[in-house]
Image (cartoon, rainbow, N blue to C red; front, top):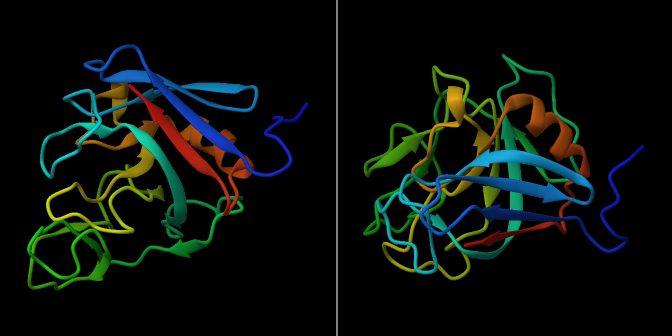
Amino acid sequence: MGVHTGKDRAQLIVRSLSRRSQTGWLTIGSLRVACALGRSGSVVRKREGDGATPIGQFQLRSAFYRADRIVRPGTGLPLKRLGPNDGWCDAPSDRSYNRFVRHPFPASAEQLWRTDHLYDVLVVIGHNDLPRRRAGGSAIFMHIARDGMKPTEGCVTLRASDMRKVLPHVRASSRIRICG
């Protein structure tokens, strides 16, 4: 039995238990899975480094995966292999802020090629990208959760088994709605 997501596009809905909650539920069609959220809960006006998950509706831009660790995941999103030099700029004053970059990079940039398994699969959430607001928050992803569903720096995380269930239903037209 498949997940029914509508004819036009699949929408992911994230509902936290409260604005301060670090956990919630992600639904897509009839599928519902647990998710972890930011250590500071959810906020309407995200700021760089606040540890909060942004509230709003956002396009899902693309996905990345570690081909050396997992089989290419099935998804309708544009999908790219991660490489050892891949990063994401989190320096608000840099012109590449909240953009994919390559290491070595002269400004602060998160390393996407990690020794843990958190970024074995990651989906770029289109928060603060078109247009970008200086210090408005960067590197907001949907990715693999830490053991025990520990809180994030602002991302939405899922167990690896749940990510495998969700991704096949996500398309290039999909959006994620994060509710407070």
